[in-house]
Length: 139
Image 1: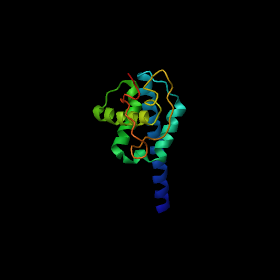
Image 2: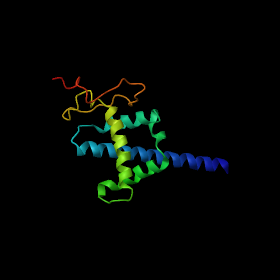
Image 3: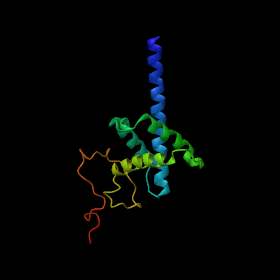
Image 4: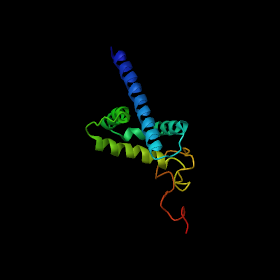
């Protein structure tokens, strides 16, 4: 009986995790297309895989993950759900992490250049990247 319960939890966790990954992918692709940034799906998939490997999403509470999953499904339909402000904040966290994890700021925030995933941004592992530094925009 215990093994059946453990198997059910494992399967449920897999389904929940994979659908959260799909939500993250769809959020990033949608947001990048809205702003006209060039990003390929394989770069987004590499980011999601890197985030899972770095256990980035473990800091997200279950309710935030569920909010992101549900809103990602209904956002394209134009249906306004409750707690939309919380969704916008959570979505901004994901997009910000994605942008810091790519070459976007190293390329001077040039939207005409394609974005490439570098590594998961961690301020403790990677030197400080100030996108508004005059080193990127001399003169």
